[in-house]
Length: 348
Image (cartoon, rainbow, N blue to C red; front, side, top):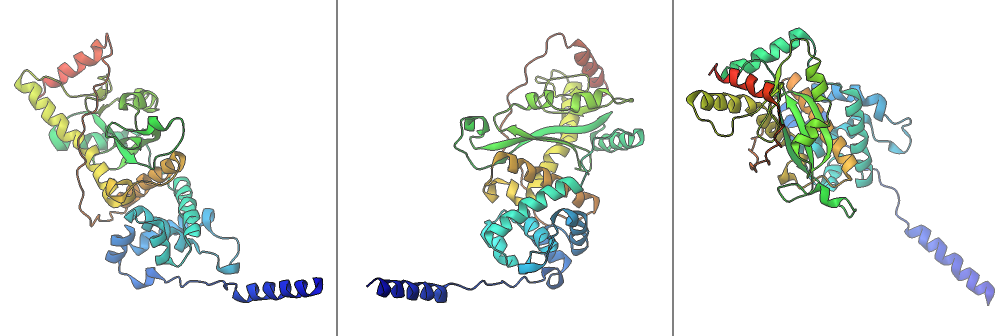
């Protein structure tokens, strides 16, 4: 009887082995050879030349050590990551396009994101005199607002909710889970400073106070101003709008301030249009906050790369819903900044 049962068990094991699915290697089509530059920009946001250049830049960080078992080549990993950032599609659809599994695609996206953040060191606050002078001149051409070295603001990037004790900190004033990203841009919409680590409920003024920007600007030899909205406090190096203008000069000051500060709003619009995974229409980033901050930083560095390479956007930008940021707390005895702004108003 025991021998009979053993024989039946062996037959079952052999049957299971016979029914076991063989490993299938999917077709990894060479999209770089199949699509034109315009089609590549529409799908991956970059032309063939820039994609290959980017692959070379990050290859040392992501290249498989062996080609055994059909290891995913570096350019397929880069394309998978760019497609996910550009479209914000379900990851399963993105991986199906490139002939890899969803789990492999998830690993590839985060691997490439980390590599881009290490390889592309192109978010740099201006410190050289000639660079600062060029930025000031570019901003002055917009509306005649002098001495501006950057426009500053924050934007909410939607993320997936989490079941942790600090979940409430990530619910922003617009009512969804997010990361509050602070950024500074030049007149060409290039990011020169970014802070991507604070939860959505954090006030813009608090992020500024706990960033490196105050020390950076105060250390500049020739000085300069940031321009920000009413969510920031008025400082000697940060010009804000006048809340209740009482004269034509103050109204003209506010108008010039608004037109000049619009650079940061347009930069955020272009960023989210180029990388749809950051836009509310792309859903939300379905990862832990620490991984989401890396993806946001990666997208901002790729945005700068696109500007440096003059890559056309080829998609329409959309303005964000303007939910008024609560006013920054008034800093007592900040007479120097108020007097400086009053003298500036006299120019308009």
